[in-house]
Image (cartoon, rainbow, N blue to C red; front, side):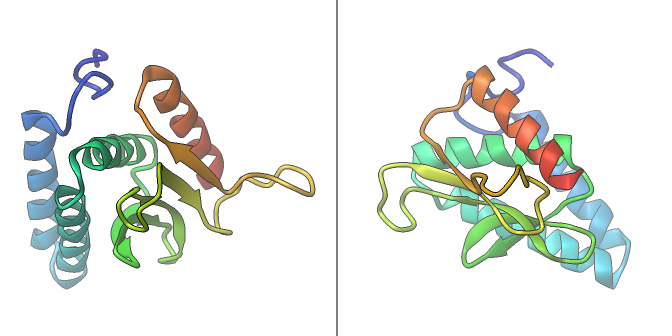
Length: 149
């Protein structure tokens, strides 16, 4: 996938990404009741992202695509009105808090205690996000992989 298609130079989801998400939601609904719940959770995340200010929305979309590609076993859902991703037990592993949520100067990628980020007696559990770049994407991929390891 080229840098432009991966969203590093984009302002949001590509038409192909939007189509793929709609297809996945339809597949989940076709699975029945449990699949319909997952589809509804995915739609709630996409709706929440769509409501964000343009700068926050662009970051949230890139986070969503990156998490979905890196950890397809995580399920999207909203958590306190924020896009979040749960493990198989339904526990929140990570979330995206847009800067507009609490009128802060940056968005945040946060991790809950279910994330396997432990590093000695002290480690970060949230990261400020201001702009998306290939370096930021690489770091997010590393963090997500560690969180689900």
